[in-house]
Amino acid sequence: MDVLVVADELTAVGWRLAGAEVSIASPADVEARFQEALQRAEIVMITAQLAVRVSAPRLAAALEAFPPLTLVIRDLRHAQEPPDLEAEARRALGVLP
Image (cartoon, rainbow, N blue to C red; front, side, top):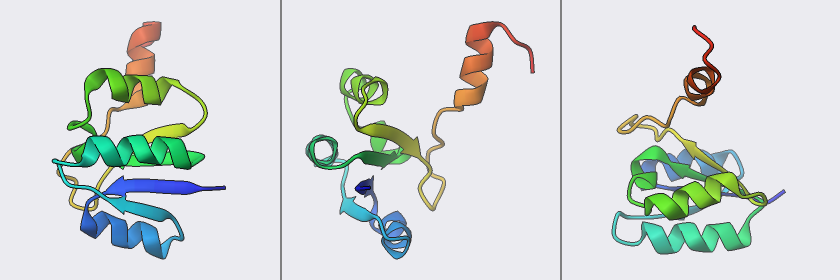
């Protein structure tokens, strides 16, 4: 299964060690790298810090589409946290924690 992680340099090192393909992106080129990843891999992960630089409609479309499975993950510095999907689902269902 092809896994591609769009990340900063530090986070990319960890994912490389885990056997994933990585695409090191900067805020300036993250849109292009993310789009390329979506066309090439079965699973695409992007760090939350870079995901905020992707246009909201493009990111939402990628998260809703399948394939590829697209996930927003933490970077090693925890500079930006990904959304809490469990809390969002509970809120949408009206279930209290």
